Image (tube, rainbow, N blue to C red; front, side, top):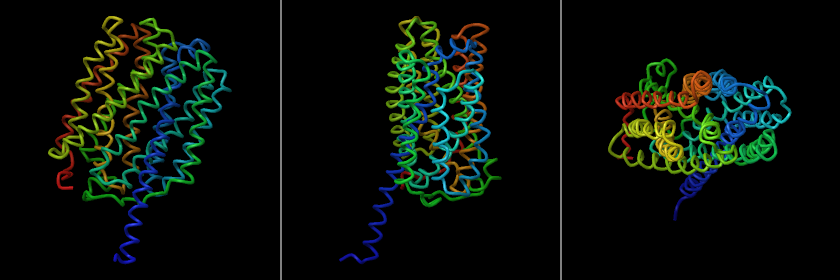
Length: 418
């Protein structure tokens, strides 16, 4: 018969596994709500633009305001995450962004909307830093690509729902109504996390050696595996951030769709591509990692390169080819979501993981989706939205080049032996 100690160990193991998947489920749902909230504005953008009578550049500046506060909050937030429990910080951030979204209906000036976006950025910075770090403490190195692929499936689904909620409700009830809908789920999930999610022990799932480059702040500054992945992601985020903000307007203005139809079609393409691309990229990387430690980087690099032809067709092809071009480009862009985030998480140890994710978020947004909507809008004001969107084709190529280079410095995971 098993000893009491063995029985307790098995029970403890089952509870730990159950707690890990409860956390994965709740954090994935919260990530879904996070992106639903973020993509409501692009869904109602022409309506907001009409009411406040602002040009494309000033509409892009709203996203810029969001990411400026997001980036400024990140360094402090990262330090907090490496020194204090993450669960209370996730709860506070969720409540802040949900309440700010709820009060959006009271905004009646462009300045008020600008301030609202800035406040939401502070709240969302906490969640986006702490959630991957918490999941990394629940799951070992060889599982993180698979787990983060599941977690980041929420991005396309949430973004698609943001387009649909914004476009459909905004067209029917005005642009303020969708913000009520997107605020409530965050408040409910905060309650579920409070009572159902436990805080994992920091570093409890680490298997890689905590070398100086991986486990100290000074080492982080010279960690080439981390920096190439971070800069490659920055260029990917520039691409995704820019096209996600401007594609509904592009379909509305240049292809002739109604606002509601443009958002519903784009939402459908995004959710199908996002789920299929994220799943396929995670699956491919997981299989390739059995024989190649560089797989996380190489899957991401090839997916960025293969997205370029779809973007060319979408922006410059005839009207009938726009949606197929978007579908092809988005599929390949979403392929790198799980692998690239897993590469960044695995490049560092638990001791500095929240700080590393905070620095990564600062960099990818400073170079990525903070400036890209405004840059695209400015180019659009001086030429056309097609030319503005074409800027993202260049950043796809730069991202691929960085990730191919970064593959040379990927840590040796030895996953075939795991």
